[in-house]
Amino acid sequence: MTAVVVSRRLTLITGPDEAKSWADEFSLWKQGGIGPGDTFGKTSPFVAPPDITGLLSKVHLENPNVSVRWNRMLDEGIEDPQAFTSDKILVFGKTWDVPRAPYFLLALLDPDAHEQMKDRPMLSELGIHFNSEARAFSQDFPTISGWITSGF
Image (cartoon, rainbow, N blue to C red; front, side):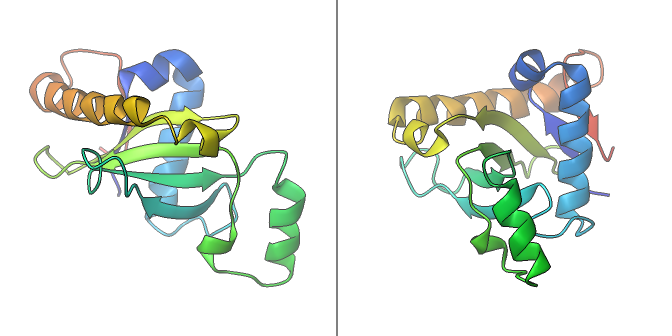
């Protein structure tokens, strides 16, 4: 099973129930249990700013503005995940030095995700947040609560 951790900050923003739903669905998606266009679409690593390149990635999420288009593409047999784009994006990273190498879900950029991704200081802060959460998780989980997990 694919291990997923929702950052404490994202859990505070979304609430524990929604955070658990994100963790479970993301885990299922990474295992291949959810195909392209069913919640998750195009995914790619960040190429800027340099301090998050190779550290963080993003995936486009289905939302009411794209549901009709995504469903039509699925009905037409389109299976290329890169075809499923939106302006709602989930930012995540994958650890390598934490037990089970979980994915960390860090932020939902919505609305106007593409505009938000031009904010390089904010993106750099997400890299700092990722490193901080991964370090704290490796040291303190499960003794400190606040993280929502799936696949452990």
